[in-house]
Length: 93
Image (cartoon, rainbow, N blue to C red; front, side):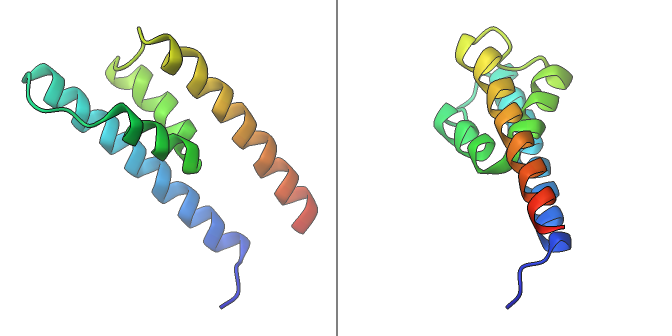
């Protein structure tokens, strides 16, 4: 099986959409005061490529914006992921 740029882009979009959905769902659960999604799960999604989705969700749903680790860590992670993407695109295009 060959890894293509197109496949990587689809996977990247998928992980970011999943991350947005999980932040949204956690916000819904928080408002309803129900059992929540673990922060570790949200971090793992961000670490595996969903940092931009996490940033979008944090702003869109006003969720986790008061947590310093999310407020500063997610944008830093997004920056690192952007640098990695630019490097890979430059190297393999």
